[in-house]
Image 1 (cartoon, protein in one colour):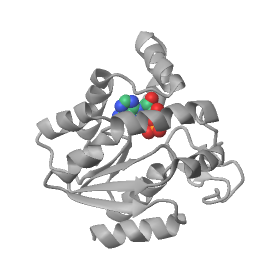
Image 2 (image 1 turned 120 degrees about the horizontal axis):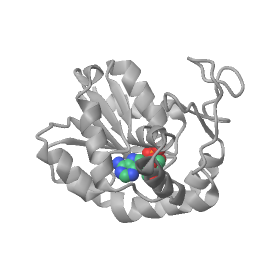
Image 3 (image 1 turned 120 degrees about the vertical axis):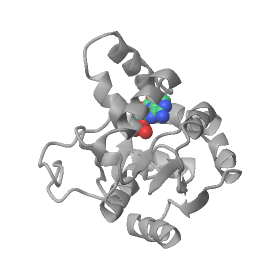
Length: 210
Ligand code: AMP
């Protein structure tokens, strides 16, 4: 089972991919989490990655495509995976296509820009796993701590209103064309209303991909 999740920043991709991971016992690959991890290392590449993330811009294709290819060849991906945050533009979509990998579902989480801005303020993440929470809609069991590891949750540096606006603009310009791209491909395209409550969104996804 191979699934691509598309949607604006804050549309709930991270949360829904965690649910899909549990449900189908497949790997959950967040390119944002991979890049944030890489940006915390030492050296020129880490610095370069950090500079793009901090500006709300896409990291160059060459870097992320290589990282993704390495990741999907790891053992935990043998039964399938969910791609959360990849592809992010047509070049990445085409390069995934060229690998010959057959994607089963493309799920688009549809939500308005206004809803995004208010949602992002309440978002908290567990940096090591990429698990995400929301203070109102999906709170952790213990305040400020990850449910599984018990480690502290943080607010992402790029979850400020200024950077969010840039990330939304990047979605509209670079990622949105992928919706048409996948509608013309031999893949099941599923669109869900991501403004609803978390459980309703996941029920709607599961109802359409089972
Ligand atoms: P996300 O966690 O998916 O919202 O991603 C956070 C940031 O990581 C984005 O704003 C980009 O700077 C970078 N990023 C994540 N995925 C990709 C990708 N597929 N291509 C380029 N940059 C990416």
